[in-house]
Each structure stands twice: as structure tokens, then as C-alpha cells.
Length: 92
Image (cartoon, rainbow, N blue to C red; front, top):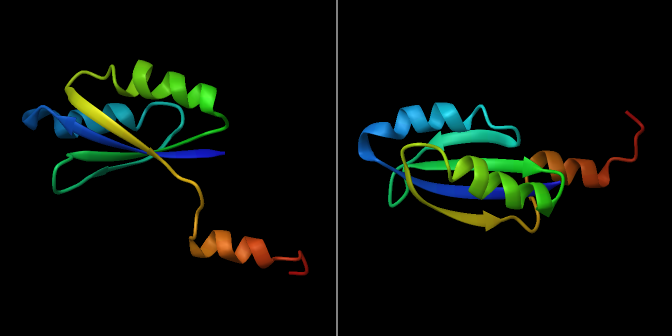
């Protein structure tokens, strides 16, 4: 599974509407409004790079109200759930 973090700048009055639209896109797992340079961060999880390469520009980037995006790919996850799964031998 490929995980990407899409940083999104919106037209100032459109942040809530854009966030709602993004949440409906297949592969968009989470959407957050944030402070700072970006208005929204969307966490995208898709099975392969080909789907990611279509979803980010064709669906996310084409959403009305988005000014620009920047995408960052995750190499590894260090969440508690992932660490626990690494050491799980299935005896529970």
C-alpha cells in the first residue's frame, strides 16, 4: 500500500467545501484542515503508484477551489499499530 500526504492550498473561502469533496475520493483516507502554509492535508492510501499517479492530478488536483498541491510519499510507518504488527506472531 502506498501512502502519500497531499498538501493543499485552497481559495480562502473554499477550504471546508474542498475538504468535503476530497473526503469522497476513493483512496483518500483522511482529510485535515491545518494551520500554516497549507490549508488542507489529505492522507491518500492506494495499492500502487499507477493509481496514485492518476488520483492526485486527475481527481485531487482537479477539485474546484484548489490553488496548488504538493505531494510527499511515505517510505515507512512508525505508528504503534505498525510496530505491534511487526512483532505479532499470531498467538493472541
